[in-house]
Amino acid sequence: MEHFISIDQLSKQEIFQLLEDAQMYQMKKMQISKQLFVANLFFEPSTRTKMSFTVAERRLGLEVLDFHAEASSLAKGETLYDTVKTFESIGANALVIRHEADQWIEELEHITIPIINAGAGTREHPTQGMLDLLTIYQEFNTFENLNIVIVGDIKHSRVANSNAHTLQRLGANVYLSAAPGYEDESLPFPYITIDEAVEFCHVVMMLRIQHERHVEKHDTKQYLEQFGLTKEREQRMLSKAIILHPAPVNRGVEMDSDLVECSRSRIFKQMNNGVFMRMAILTHVLQKWGIINENLVKE
Ligand code: CP
Image (cartoon, rainbow, N blue to C red; front, side):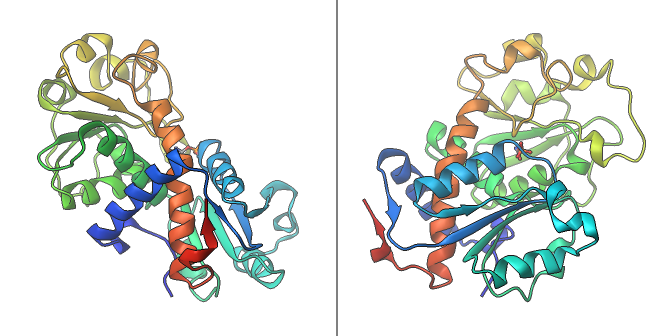
C-alpha cells in the first residue's frame, strides 16, 4: 500500500474528489465512528501544517498523539526509523510526518501504517499543494487556461515542486519567476519577470526565501523592489487576479506587508482551506488502506 507522499500519485479523478470532499467538510460536520490514533511527527518547525492537521484530526474524532522532537528520545540518539517504528508498535493507525531531509521517505518505506507527507525537505509538500488547488478552484471553478506564476525561491521550495506539475496536469499555464540563483533547472517551465507576470497572470503565488536551506546567505535589502510583489505591481494585476502564499510570509521581503491582507490576498483563506483539505486527505488515506470504510464516516 502506498504512503501519501506526492500529488503525482493521485489521478485527476482523485484530485477532484478530494476537492469535493474538502468542500463537503467545510459545510458539514463529519466524524469517523471508530477509535483511531494519528501521530503528528514534526521534526522541523511548523505552525500551520501541524496545527491544521491537529484541528482536522480532532474534527474527524481521531485521537491525536502529539510529539515534540526536542523533548523526545531523538535527544538520546534514536534514529528516525526507530522513532517512527515506535509509534507503529504502540498502536498508531496513521502518521503525519514532516522532516527537513529530502529523502526521509525512503528510510520509512517498510513502515506498515499509512504515512502522510507534511513536508519533505525541498522536495514535496503535497497537502499544501492540495489546499492551494482548493483555493484556486473555489475562485475560478477550473484550472483550464489559467495563467499561474510561482514567484520566489523556486530552488529551495517544496511548494513549487508540488504545485507546478499538478497545475499543468490540470490544464493551467504555469510560469516561474525567480531572482538569479533561486531558479530550479529541474522544473521545465518558462521563467518570466514579476513585471511581466502581473500583467497577465490570474494567480500570483509568492514564496518565502528559504534562508534555512541556503548554504550562502543572500542580501535581501533590494529584493522586494527587484523581484517581489510591491504595491505598484499589485495595481497592475488583472482585475480578478488573486495572490497566494503558503506562509509564513516575510513581510516586506517577498511582498509588501500591506498586501498580506489586501482584497486580492487569499493567504488566510489558504490556511482555513488547509483544515478541510487535510480532513479529506486523512479520510482518503484511511479508506485506501482499508482502516475505515465509507460507512464509518458519519454526519
Ligand atoms: N505553509 C506551511 O507549511 O507552513 P508551516 O511551515 O507553518 O507549517
